[in-house]
Length: 181
Image 1: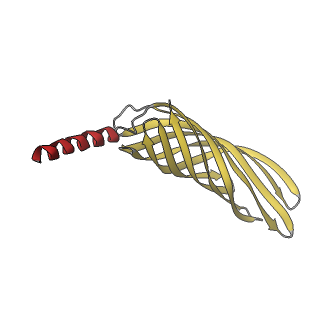
Image 2: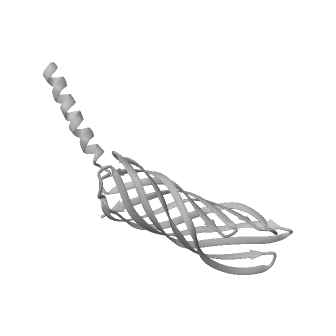
């Protein structure tokens, strides 16, 4: 019986050690995510706060230079949907899309890891307020934190991202699926 326990312990140890490296894939990855964008527009004349479904397409690279640490970069196209609200008796709307380029750093704790990212967000917006239509664009700061679960080349992750755009603040909560090549 004692020998059986030793063998079982050895098998469990080997299985756990393999599982701890299950999130160690490096290289190029692609993926997509869906979530909820909370858009808060606050100017001298308007206070507009609403949310809508949003989605993103992701491509990136994880260098994997250091064990237990993820370092990489990511590019994502994000569509935050369209929010609308009745202001002073008129239907007003706001929509935003953009491309982000972000540096990423994280810690691997086996198949579960935690990460942070920061970079620039190049955006285009369309809005209609009180009968006046406006198109605008710019480059601003984006950052976020998240958690991921990875087994071999597949990963799922949950994250919150913040986009600070002139008079607009966007909090984007999303879930994504990632595949590393």
